[in-house]
Image (cartoon, rainbow, N blue to C red; front, side):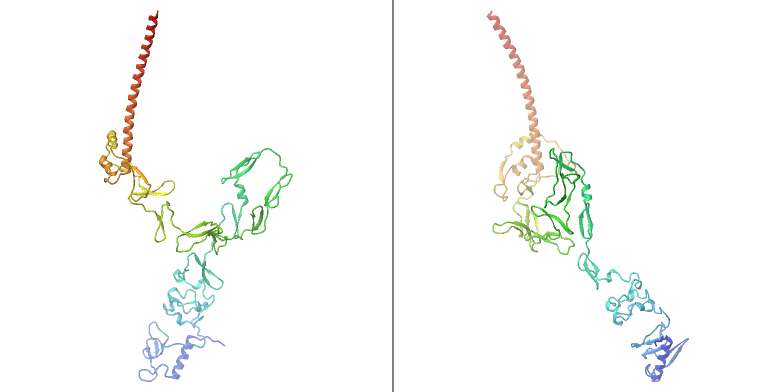
Length: 490
């Protein structure tokens, strides 16, 4: 029968054995039995400096039994002070590591709630082999004893810890779906909400017309079908409809299908078929995304490490299909391919100060001609004589020419920067013509021409008025001449 071993019994047993054996505690400094020593109210048997086992008050804190070697028990050692005699304060930090505990030597009934805190455990000192199943529950862990840093993270993105029935392991995070407007979700199956779809239709057709289309807003477009009498509504086989008839209130509805089926066109008729049997056709340029709850397709991938695109190929001797081919920018696309297979905007030059312009068929480099002309960024305004500018402009040669290195048959018309600078002294140097200056000269010359045209118009009007007066005087003279001739004939 099991008996509790109190601290007093253990102490008595140890003292008896020591006295019987005589040499376990050592022989003391004189070779005889270990001396008893009294220090106030405390008695000590043995010397801590020389004996392996010392009984009594040895040091502070006051130890009852000080054993320099290992203590091995074949029976059970119960705490004589009752439940909870060893709490968290009785253990020094890191005093118990994984090497001091046998597998399953400490279960949940051996620990008081909160007796072991996070500072009492060495890193990795407690592994799964040291804990019995269900030996550690939430009330056995102090708040904050287990931090996120003690849990090994998942290595892949979009993963969480999942219980697989045996252990906790990293796995893909679940994907959640929410039905949008006009859809319902039952389990993992989406369906069309017929009530929402029907509620979208907001218009009606008048008598003698039929519904032709339904717009995104729900408005209807009607088509005149003429007058007449409908004698029957038929639903022939393969139409995908049921109902109809020859009299009374007639209704039509889609032909019902079995579970997980939908109506599909077979080329000439409609028939029910499973909706989840589709797969990418060879050469179709598509691939099925794996490990998805629903069938999702994407463009088929091309060979990694190369810049490739999907191209529809239709050779005369083989079946047409989509296939991956190396990509290089087409001429006139405005793109260039770098040595690292990266796409970039085609560089321009020579000459400098050019931009890419679309000529209606392709992108080509051309001189930049868009400049900032905000009044708020200008100063030192002065007036300019337009007729003087027009006179100078008339002396500048304007020819047709090509840029060196731009390519054959790309012609331009304009003045030389040297002549322009010599005539007007505008711009930074005599190698460039700023579009702002060119536009200003052109506009000012147009204003001067307009002023000249107004003066010419005024002169023409005055000459026309003078001519009109002369014609009137001439007409009066001719009339007088006719009257004179008439008198002379008499």
